[in-house]
Image 1: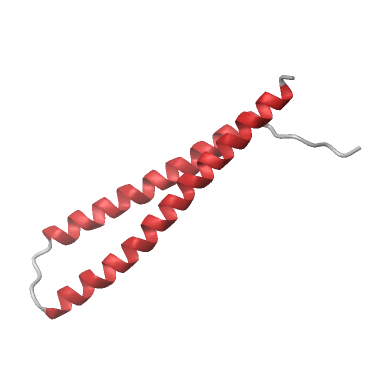
Image 2: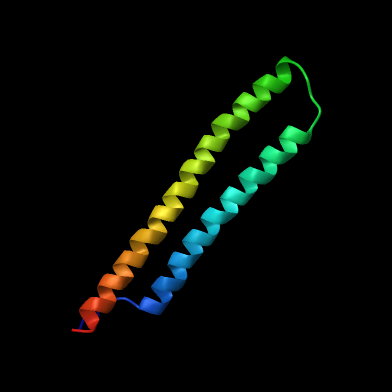
Length: 87
């Protein structure tokens, strides 16, 4: 017989992992931004590098957002499962 459902404790833990990894990305972005701002560097190469970093940062922020959304979605699914199971 097939088994359906969810281990809600595991799902809650996994949702927290998604959120923690999103926070890790945010912290990394902040560290790199701070390091870049504190590095003395003038000229066109710096401007090109900073422009490239800004593009990469947008991609990292998108990944952070996706992880946060996945964590919320999983948590919503967990809550729905708990509600269904308690009926």
